[in-house]
Structures are given as structure tokens and as C-alpha cells.
Amino acid sequence: MEIIVTKHITGTTVVKPKGRFDAFGAPSMRDQFNDLLNHHGARFVVDLTETTFLDSAGMAVLVSMLKRTRFVNGDTKLVWPAQPAARRVLHLTRFDRVFDMAETVDEAIDRFCSGPQFTPLVTSPSSI
Image (tube, rainbow, N blue to C red; front, side):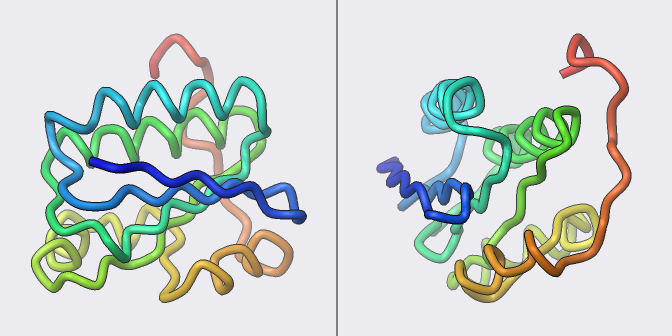
């Protein structure tokens, strides 16, 4: 899995996993995210438009990102995958009810300024 990272002037980091986001790519994504969270703030958009497959390991990384960013008063927003199968997985698992989902990266970034508020999911980082 290729991962493209873009830092925007708004202080938001866009992470774009390309290809399969599965058990083989999840560890590198988790490592990259941990490094970004430690050095670049806690506002993330995960652009899934070029993600062709998503399994439980990839989804676990997304949930971890969400919990960790919200713990430090940030957030993780997702951009819908273009692939119908990956999109269906997010809908069936109700990720679209847990994450703020957007159709485009620009829409997701704009929601950091005008989007809905959230309730933190965790109370301590040790549970992550």
C-alpha cells in the first residue's frame, strides 16, 4: 500500500492510502499515523478515494486514529472510497455514523471549521 501525506495550511494533515488497506498495509499506516500525530497535530483527513479494498485491520487503524485524535481534542474525518465494495464495508459497519464522512478532501477540511462537534470516545490513552 502506498501512503501519500499532505499537510495543508489549515493545520490539517491529509493521509491518502492507495490500493489495499488490509492486514499487510495496516502496520505501516499505523506507524505513519503515530509519527504524524506526535509531530504534526491532531487534525486528520483520511482520503480513501483510491483505496480499493478495506478489511478489519485497516478499519482498526482508522478507529485508533479517531480515538487518539479525539483524546487530544482533534478529529479524524474520512473521504468516501470510490470503490463500491470499500464504500459498502464502511456503510455496513456503520463507520458512516461514527466518523464524519465527506465526498471530497476539500469538504472534509472545511468541516473542521464549520462541522459538527463531537464527543470524545475515550478517557485515557492507555485504552488505545
